[in-house]
Image 1 (spheres, rainbow, N blue to C red):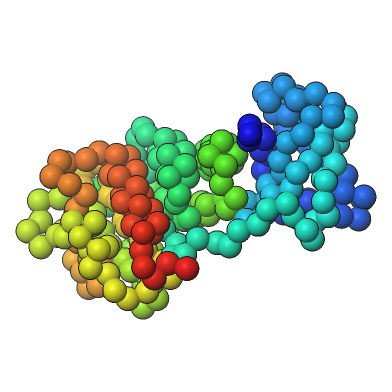
Image 2 (image 1 turned 90 degrees about the vertical axis):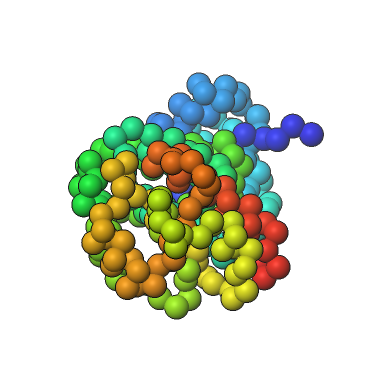
Length: 255
């Protein structure tokens, strides 16, 4: 059976459709996507998702209106949030971060945090660029048929982020040329204590500074590697995401 196309709509707007007889008004951008990109015609069916684990079957009624086939309270499909959450903190590279967002979403990332480091090329992100990242993320959610949209957080500094360390999460940092680093897949295989979040920090192309590595060590970060090769920032981020999500699918304590 052919899978229906999907449109990601904010949860609150879908909830508002309940008092309007399950009719949902589309924005100009959404209408363009439905009619021009997906090429749906009046009466065609598709799916509406809220990015919070819910899906509704819908009919394209007219130019800017669709109708849900079930009430807001009774979605056609629902799923719980993945556990444990897979999280990446990535120093934004000069090129490639758009691909990191798209690929990590398709693979199964839950939280993506852009960070600035001592050797980062970007110490801040404009609202326009962050908006573009959200658009890429939305498109990746729709294309990959995910029901949960990853949380793309605002950029923060590496040092501020390390202050969020807690016992319920596992924090690791990708490194190269360190004798005391552990392969990420081995660390995950040996992990026998349930954690709510698993974090991997990916540094800039120039690498972490000694001070950053020392701070991470004091915060009980675990040094990890992803293979024998030296990877670019974007490659390392996608590789880490794949290893984490593959482990989660087979982990014995995942519910």
